[in-house]
Length: 261
Image (tube, rainbow, N blue to C red; front, side, top):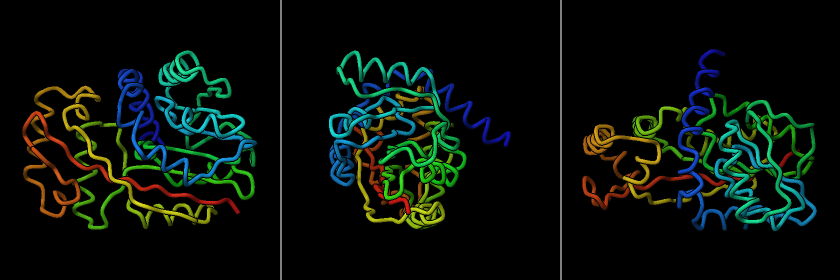
């Protein structure tokens, strides 16, 4: 329990400190993955939606024109403040409200939502299975959980390296999962997986590292790590122009939709 609490406290501290960067981050704000999520969900105009760990609010904003109402929730009050400023004040969305919430203990009644989304966040959760169960609990019968998160390779050593690389950049990174693990968690929560796919995002390495406040020494250590990685891990991350100002690498995601029984 103490370890889970400490992990959540660290996430709140870091995302309070770096909130502005997640509003403007092109990785979070743009990209065809948002369009893909919308296509997979096929939202309806009368739906009630919950966006868990909304961060900069980009998913909530993307879906808002297509549903009746969105609640954007996050563990970190500062992120919610910045998301509300972005979504309501700057973008003018009138059907989005905001609520502080722990993803593993959602403060909502059972069977309230038609759709729950969570994008690029569960790797921060100390107990991803508890999160999946909570999403299933607050979904109406037949409602959808639509999740996007970092994806690990099936190879154990490569998976451990990818997780370590992410954690070195952001200590609040708890753990990512492979596809089979996510399918198992959905099933254990009573969610029937209807769709699952891999989505590849290529990141500008320096922007990615600096968004979490990494200094020159930390960036040099990340470069060294990938330089010395096993071939299977390097192939998974596919670095290009590594060690230069133009360095990029691949971050693989899973997009998965499950329906509540």
